[in-house]
Structure formats: structure tokens, C-alpha cells
Amino acid sequence: GFGSKFQIAVAKAVKVFRSSGSFDFTGHLGRYSNNSGCLALLGPSKFRRSGWGCLFEEPQTRWKTRRLLRPSHPAWLRSARRCITALTLQALLWRPSRPLRARFSELAHQAGLDTSKTLLAVHIRRGDKVTNPSNRYHPAESYVAEVLAVGRQHCSKALPCQLFVASDDGSALDEVQAALFAMAPSLEVEVIGLRSSETQHRSAVGVELANFMGADIHALEMAAEIMFDIEIISRAKVVVGTLASQVTRLGCGLGAAWGTLDSAVALDVELLQDQIQLHSQWGIR
Image 1 (cartoon, rainbow, N blue to C red):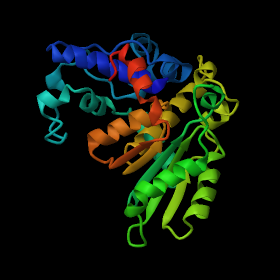
Image 2: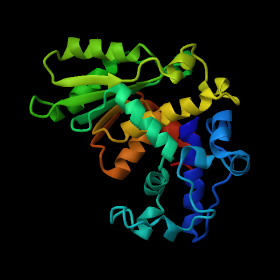
Image 3: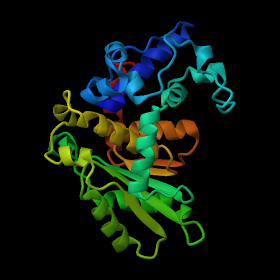
């Protein structure tokens, strides 16, 4: 999936930077950048070398640790010692491209995001996860119960909240709204999210998203929607999701690096050791 491919690139870069080397961002992030949409955006020459620039601000041809340091970054991120940790390097490399940032603005408007309000988030991953016997199905009530347990303190009439629902299931938004109203009808929380997205349309059949993403022009839109979910999750004070979801893991990692995340809850926390063992083979800890 997209999150793992991004984290593998980060893990490789960290290993090289720790030895004072340099890392070349070449190749593609799977079908998320190897598609006709990225080809049209980058042109044949850039596309052949790398799809990184389709989704992210293109780094220097070969990045060294000192090139990651910018005056605009917080002082703690500009520390050469800290910037070569996976968490901070991941946050530094998460710089969506200009076309994607413009698309993010459109998606934020569609979702109803209000940046003046405290943000909570849930990520409800279904699709192929529902049909995979190793993953449990978690109803909307389970997500809402954890949000209320951890996030209620952040919301009041004086401090209104928004609850962002990121999901590949088009019904998840309505399910969360119904559960929240039933469990806490007086709580000042507005439920927001995307409806009828490309990702929801294609994942509704319950199979891997990547199976739909050959040279399809829709692959770029799906990548934009997935990255948008990660971006918004990274801005939330409280996140409830699952360890099985790369979107949850990456969004929380970015939020922890930026200092926006207060609390994260995994409904499948029993999978933690399995996840650590699985990702260790790719250098992800």
C-alpha cells in the first residue's frame, strides 16, 4: 500500500543519512505514481526517472542531511541529530506537490473542514480489510466510543469540535453520525468527511485498491484522496483507527512529529507485535 511504500523509502533514507551518505529518490511509489495521471503531469522524461515528483515536492537529485534543514522548519526539526530519525525525516519528506495541495484545498472544502475548530479523526478501513479473515470488522460505535472516551475533554460549546471520518466505505460517515447522536446527543461535535469519493467507489467491492490502479487516470485521484486523509489525520488531536491501516499509522506518525497529536487509539492493538515483526523486514520500526 501507499503508506508502506512511503515508509520504506524513509527507512532507506534514514539508514543512509546515519552513515553520512546521500539518498537518491528514484523509481515509483507503486501504482500510486506509476499511472497515466502522473505521466501527464510530469511528462515522459521526468516520469521515466521517478514518480516522486508527481505526489511530492521533488527533492534534490541526491539529498544529504544538511539539505533537509530549512529556516522555516521548527528548531527541533532543524537539529541534524534529530532529523535523521525515521519520525522526523518522514515528516520532513511529507511535502505534497503543488497540484496535490490545490486538490487538498478542494477536498477540504467538500469535506466541510473548519480549521478554527478542534479536530478529532477516525479512520475506518474496510474494503479488502473486511474480506480478509485476519482483520476484524469494527462497527462505527466502537470508533465513536473511543473518541468519546479520549476526546470529549477537547469539545464544548466554547470549544466546538469537528470529527473527521476518513474511510473507503461510503456509508461510514452516516454510521458515525448516527452513533455519535445516539451515544452523546448533546456533545458539540460536527461530523465531517468525503462522500462518493473515487476511493470509496472502487473499494466498495471489497478487494485491494491496487487491483484497480494500472495505468488508470483515476489512480492519481485515488492517491490524492488517500494522501488527503493522511494529511487531515495528521492535524487531529485525537485519532482512532487500526494498526492494520497504513493510513492510520502514517497519519499518526506525522501528527506525533508535528506535535499536533495528543492521543491515538488502535482498536486492534493486539496486532502490535505482529506489525512490528512484519515491517522489520523492510527496515520500518
